[in-house]
Image (cartoon, rainbow, N blue to C red; front, side):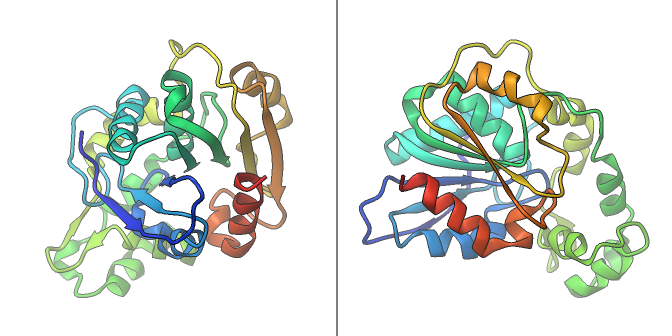
Length: 254
């Protein structure tokens, strides 16, 4: 599948960097970080399938997501560096394990190659519950979301995926709901190892990447390194973008 992308050109000579957003996100969410990191080299942020401006599909498996990324990177000309957050981190891990020749260095933001017991269905239902006929601007949708999503940062995050003019979500909420078990899961049939450096960068207050996960992570990624951003949760790149950027920059340039 040909993904929609937003690219930042660069005078720098660092390898191309590809940024992969998480569930309910988009390339636009990463605009500031992408622009700042483009002083090193070119940066491309993608819209994953069923998100943003990319095509919709009935399938949302990590094999599919990794394949989409492989197509994008082959069009760019790999190998590239990859930063992936949450769902995007799992897609990036699946890519590195199945197509290691396309990835130089990998940053996985606040996710591990494991199946999680939580679901994100409450957010799907919150977005479905918004009466789009009453939305004239994003703030109208945020006000409705406040009934079920009290965190203002999440209200703002979700409403970035709202096409206000057409009063529609640019998220395939029906398929994301139907495929939620796959999204919070991890494919049992992925094998092999990725021998290049990988940084697992967690939110300091998040429980998504625990010490109990480290042996499993090293089984796939023998050169894994671990770091945490203090005072951040799962959306660490949105909560402390400058610190996140500095961590990514230091690892990629090491």
